[in-house]
Image (cartoon, rainbow, N blue to C red; front, top):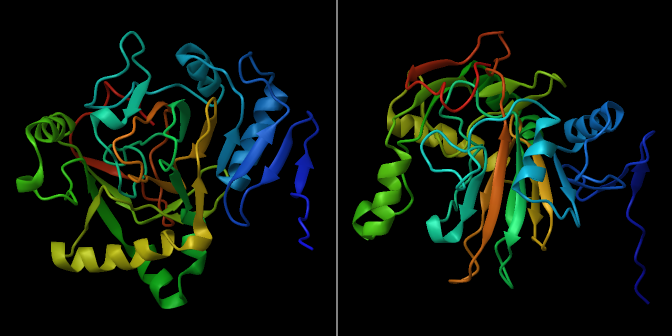
Length: 308
């Protein structure tokens, strides 16, 4: 006989039910209507849950673009959709994450090539494929805690340059005209920013590895040396223990803390359509463990996000 244990859950003072999805990252939240203006105590409970679990899943949200933006604004001012990629028509703060416009099947933290990347991202399911299409979300703080002491000591001292003109996994000769046009659009303004490899979360004080696909070079090292070190650190971020693998259903919304996670949209659904809408909340300038703040090298992102 198979025994299925009940999912551990907590009730907040405002009546939210928070159920852990994995030991390290992710929780399902119920007992809140995201379609209405939320009172400050509910927003505070959601922020507390986000700080602890880093990614929150909401079912049966039934939101449109306006409702998704209204929900995201509870956490701060919004960015526009993207520094270089067009927004949904008529909704300048909404980015279509659409399989027909390309597939971002690489680990990254959103828009780390600007000096103050978004603090939080919301993704809402619009079209869900019948199989595949999961989003992986990784706990960068858990990765930092997993580092052996000598590697952690090294990471604490490092800075990395992030850029949208990054090394694509697919060689240029294997990209068709449509894909080449998307690449040209993505890099139509070149951004380069130096960030600490270990970022201190401004609300929790947690330390997390702030790297991902846009981190291309460790400051002071060659490209080859940088790749070796970044790959080594990245392997800790993507350990299975640190990863929530989320299988989308219709009418869901996922909120994740962009300051201390990475994510990856898996390209495993053949040619089926997949579409999510993304709204991001403007963030602060990252700070390393020595108190130094990130700085822009190239590119002005003031059209995308207010100064952090």
